[in-house]
Length: 192
Length: 233
Image 1 (cartoon, rainbow over the protein chains, first blue to last red):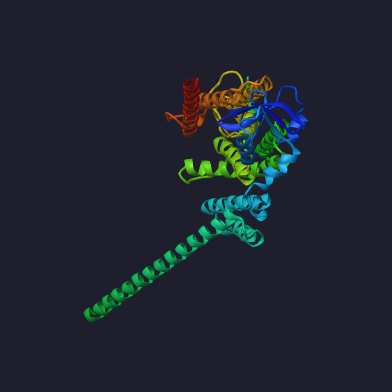
Image 2 (image 1 turned 45 degrees about the vertical axis):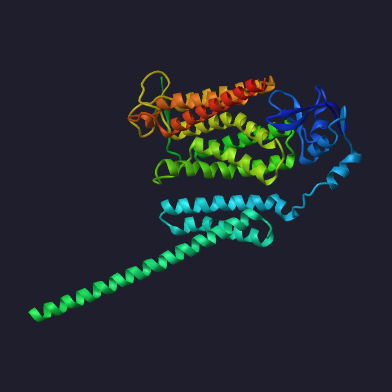
């Protein structure tokens, strides 16, 4: 099947790595190809990986000799899309900050393990935590930030409960130790 | 002829400079290749923003894990994983069908250059040095008694050659260029690891295990792909 993809004519349809793709003819202007989201494969050919909408358009025109993508049917293709993701989830800045925050937390934890001064490691750790919560506030729809902050909150609660249990166990052991030593002292006194 | 290298620095460490140069050169190559091969500029810049942090963090994590939590440092395999991780993360942040593969391929082309330059930093600092050796071009570090094999220089030269070969293969539109670079890099790292002082008294190092794993995964994937292509025919 021949494909006319906007200003790129005489394209071929092919599966590249099991993905539906449109292959541009050789010697097509590279800047034109980049404009229409074509990428260059290792073998030198330029291909455009079809979106779901474009694949549906192809299925709807399966019997046509030439599959045509132009500005007129671009609007129809877009309108038939059910993609209604909120804009804030797509903000790349949010994802970058989340990823860098995770790296800061990891570096903080690792340097806490090795450094003598706790401040040196706590700074990147808390900077990461603060950045994560900032993303939660500014980009409330960002899923990774939501998942990571909830996970960290659960971990902190578990850590807090664990510390509380440990403190209770230590205090109980100390009380037992105190009672035993008091009894021993009394015994020593009686001997005396 | 023995080369004397002074590792007592009063000013800026050459090691740090070489690491920065390595990242900068890698980023430059990845940027050029991404733009040339049609990746949008915004996505490319996202990738470049993530690579330094990701490679640094993964390099530290790698040494932390492989040393059993005893130390942290920079490891090339960890840094390579970090570069690939950055490409995968960018493709998740801004999905674009096929872009992830292109970015991963471009990272593969740049990694040998980054490693080659980083090894010059190791040469200047005296880390990752070679086995005891008193032949031509042996190296004697300040404060050390024995001369050692210049394994860092050899690694730098070998990986620079792999990088140049990779670029030539890409220019010739060789569809197997990425596979060949990975195989050559893994084989070179595996072989040259035997010439390191750290390899003394051990049969196989963690780096070599990673290289073997990489080679076996690549060969398995290649075999499966060929089998599928033959069955389709």
